[in-house]
Image (cartoon, rainbow, N blue to C red; front, side, top):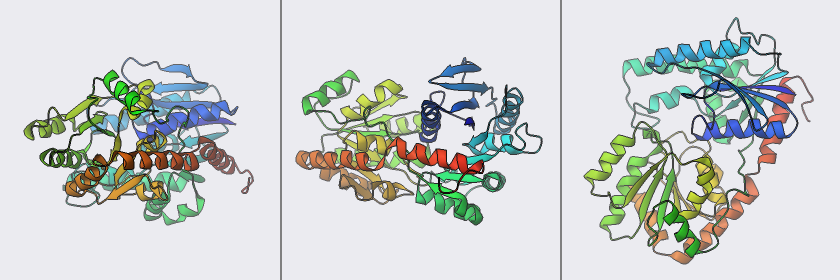
Length: 406
């Protein structure tokens, strides 16, 4: 198939779980013999057109000087790329709302081309969560609710136009049902995969300590790791407060936050006010080639999300790396961890429960080892890219009018 993937952001130009899935799917479809073109926004100084891992990447420029300027530039950028395609694709694979609307709206150069879409999150609810301290409920300004209302129409429009839809979890299907119930019958569920060769457990504690030193991290205590975008929805203020409670209780542990985002300054201020500068490290964005080693340097992985966790790529990577997991019971997390004995679930937005769960694991090295072994087994049994790619190919083929039971 000649496949055109349409995205607003994609890895490695931008970091995030969905962005990583988009790029991984494109590359693996190309490895299966498909002709794949990915159109996505261009980072500063990035190439407009390049061949990367078998995928033709066509980028467009965006203006992030204001939200309105960004929306307009995505629309015009996608339209410009689509008008310049050397040939029409057999099928379009949509990935994110803003670029999807640009590809679908009246006047699109893709008129008549079959369309399938991957659903990662309801964009209007993620937008509102920015104004609710990262939560899915609560007060928001009239302006925020007005913008969210427009975005909700966009979510509905894209789902309505997709002949077939792919979701990463049953939780995401429930979100689709809230937006457009008729779309559920066109939706296939397939969790994302993990490269189980790249992400794997460290052999010994001595190797873990050596790996920690390679990141200039402490090697004499357990490392608590969270790999997140630094935005309110990710619950990192709760995790820092839990770390403070652990410190006050005499626990010997060090928190490592990998990632960047709009909340970094506020989070650093929280750490300073609590006097935790020697107990918390902000690593910023970690290069892709270094990410597997970072998991190997850790002792426990924490997912403290407050709302709208549609899958959790970092959780799956941590499982594959043989790390015990402490996670909030939000969105698809219970579903992703179902049957895994290497995970503990706590209520969202509850630093005390988070601290108690972490304290239990910090006090028992033997238990951490057993839970880590279970975590790896769970990853091996549930997160294979072949399964996800089979589902993608089926969805794209069905969108083209192929056999329903292929």
